[in-house]
Length: 178
Image 1 (cartoon, rainbow, N blue to C red):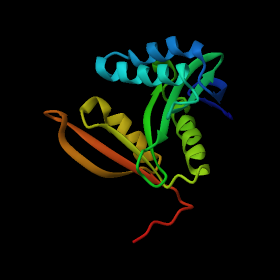
Image 2: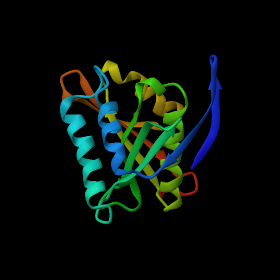
Image 3: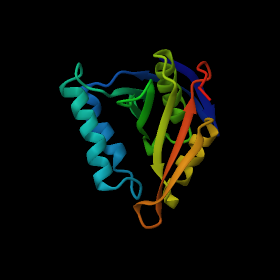
Image 4: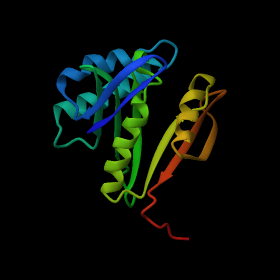
């Protein structure tokens, strides 16, 4: 997928390309996950386990990835997959953007990539679970800007003061039963 070039604030036009996961992407993904004061160690381990599982056994993996590239560099990634025991419900497991590429449209393009693929597979809805702690405020605002709706909040889920916030985006082409 080639995305429209983007510019702004004195930045030149830069094309974002989104492609499949490659073995050579793992070090860049690991580096992105080590953003200071954002992901906890356990979160990084889980994210890399999904990458490793997909790279080691792609035909058996339940995860799909989109890798964003800008100027030959991995600019971000998205990981999603179908939720077991549901009728076409999908989870967005991870989205992460290189800190040097933030606010350049990479996250939006990755989300659109995942949404298009999920909805093309008759996905009814996409579920995103994220943290309620202060450091995740921009992440929660990002989902709201992309028309995700806060569906639930579990207080103190991760630890005292850190809720689990659940967002949902429904496939506009699928009617829900009432």
